[in-house]
Image (cartoon, rainbow, N blue to C red):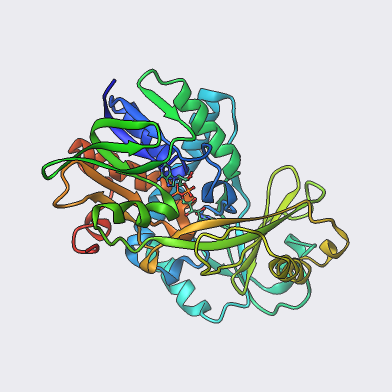
Length: 365
Ligand SMILES: Cc1cc2nc3c(=O)[nH]c(=O)nc-3n(C[C@H](O)[C@H](O)[C@H](O)COP(=O)(O)OP(=O)(O)OC[C@H]3O[C@@H](n4cnc5c(N)ncnc54)[C@H](O)[C@@H]3O)c2cc1C
């Protein structure tokens, strides 16, 4: 049976794109080469903010702000529909010893986001587990983290409840089906599948897949490793971040510490070197973790792109082909706005944000 839309890749971007398109009345076939939600979207930390939001372009900020405001509703809606709680956990975030604090404060003022300098005595009172080696802090109270593996499970269950969505796992897409200048489907290990429109949401693999059409889309894997601890529920009340490394508390006392940024192709084997380095970070941030067990260590492949600006929109010269990929370090926070924008564009609706900065046209060869 043919469908309106094929979505390639079931990470957060493919799942949420399928959910939005299906809610808008489209019939959707979601094809996943491995298991739903088992790659970067599972491996990420789930901070619902770019790590240093003021260092990004207005394009990333526009998607981030829309998504941040939308996340609580998304969490509640998925919980109500599926019984799975994505745990949108508002903890606030402390940035420690920033060297561009003035820029951060000016950016926040411009965007109307509450960010303030906090004396260290106040930080230690609020986060008693924090290490002693820091001299300055800024705090943003509204920042949340989402329990991304639960978010993925909730999205999967929400899709299973929709009659106009089919999800097929273990089904790698190997190429596209063309009819003149149009893309009319995909080739898979299990044969051809046809649809009026095809969305590539294949994360770090998107560049490789689009190369089969002769397109050069600079989306490439950027490895990241994380470690996990289990502590008392009140061990860490807020997220803390210093020198590009962070600790994230889940509601049940799990603490994630990340992450590395490695340009090593599609290798996602966790390394001893990263384990030691992340442990050292953990102890520096939260000295009591010196006595705690690392309960898990993993790696994932971020979909790296120039300046972290995703590709969202139609590909000119290939009618019927759409991209939603290249979210780099921020795919979890950017997902709601990115998938809403894609759906708006595909349905010819007024777009939720100005689509120009993300348009593939002019950015790919
Ligand atoms: C260590 C780490 C920490 C991170 N922390 C954060 C954070 O705190 N906040 C944040 O916002 N972001 C974070 N990220 C980034 C975020 O995880 C990614 O940007 C996001 O998950 C990308 O989602 P995606 O759906 O594009 O990719 P993925 O989740 O990788 O999904 C792509 C899917 O496509 C499938 N696929 C690939 N090729 C094919 C094919 N040919 N046919 C069929 N299916 C295919 C893959 O199997 C995969 O399931 C982090 C990432 C890492 C690795």
